Length: 99
Image 1 (cartoon, rainbow, N blue to C red):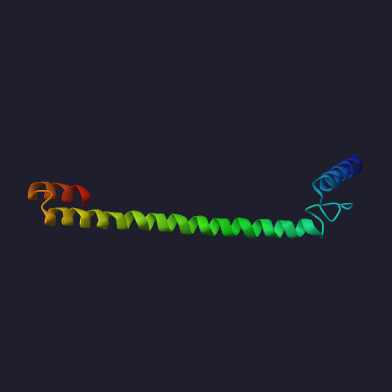
Image 2 (image 1 turned 180 degrees about the horizontal axis):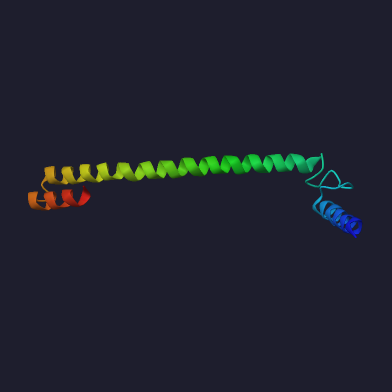
């Protein structure tokens, strides 16, 4: 009985491997072959890694941009106060809001 179960499991494993393209009988166009499929898989993973790097760089830059905008808003507020567009009381209130 143990031998029969081993044969069934081995046959099922081989059938699954061939269905996925890892067993014998796969052509050069399939992902498990040594032809263009393997090259396309390498290119795919390179594109994925480059995409992740660009995503991380974009997220870091957008976070830095938000921190710089608070200084810019404060500079605008100071300039408006210096021009006389807003009064001291309004300037102080807005400055507290920004900081």
